[in-house]
Image (tube, rainbow, N blue to C red):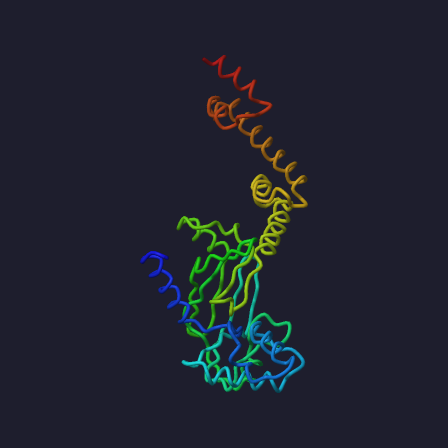
Amino acid sequence: MPGLFGLAAALLAARADAREPRASAVIDPAAAVAAIAGPCRSQVAAQLQRGESEAGCELERRAAQQRLIRSTRPRPGFGLVERTRPGLATVALLLSEARGCREWPLRTPGRAVLGLFEAKAAGCWVRRYSGELALTGVMADGRRVPRIEVAHVDGDGHVEIDLVRLAISLERRGMVDLDSFVRLELGADGWAGDVDLVAARARLADAHAAAVQRGRGVPALLVVRHPDHASADRIRGLALAAALRRQEDDFRAVQRGELPAHRFLERHAWSPYRQLVAAMAAGRE
C-alpha cells in the first residue's frame, strides 16, 4: 500500500492533469457499446479505445459516441492541436480546447491528435487553450516518467518546447537525463502529440557534424557526444588536427617565453612537443 506522501503526490498529479483537456481515447467503452449487436460491438469498442474512427459501423459508432458524451459528468474538454511547427531542437504548438460536444470526438484515421475538423464534426465549440501542459518522458522499454516538466500555454494558445532548455532543467533538478527517453508526450495522455527524441537527437548530431566540417564548433565534442555518427571518423581526424594546432601554438608560446613550460605540461598530457618542453623546463631550472 503506498505511503501517505506517495498517495498525496499521486492526487496532486491527478488534479494537475485534470486542469488540462483530455485526449480522445476511452479507457473503458463497455457501457457505450453495450447496446450494439454483432461484430460492430467489438469494432466500435476498439475505435473508442484508440480514440480514432475508421470505416465501417458508422451508425453504431455515432450512437456510441453520443451515449458516451451524455453519460460523462462533468462534460470533458478535449485538447486540439491547430498547428505544429517543428524546429531543430524545438516544437511550437498552437493549442485549443473543445467543449460542449454533442458527441465524443474521435481522431480521423492517420492523425495522432484531434484537430478543428474533428471537433466541429462532433458539434463542439472551440476556444484557445491556456494553462499547463504536462510533459511525460517515455523510455525504450515503455516505462513512463510523468510530469518531468510542465510547460505553460499562453492566453493565445501558444507554447514552445525547447529540448535544450528541458535537458538543462532536468540536470539542474537532478532528474533523469533527457537522453534516457526515446519519446516525449505532450499533455496528459499525449493529447497534444509527442516528440520523437531519437529522431531529434539524430537531427542535432547531423547539424553539429555539418557545422564542425564547416569549421565551426568543437570537433572533439561531437566525437564524445555522438561517437556512432556517420562522420565521426572524419571528425576524429579534425579533432586530432585541432589538438595538434593548439599544442603547436602553445609550444611556440613557450619558446617565446609567453607560456611557462610547466603550464604546457599540465595542459597537454600527451603531445609530440612534450619531451622538448620538458627538456626546456629542465634547462631553465
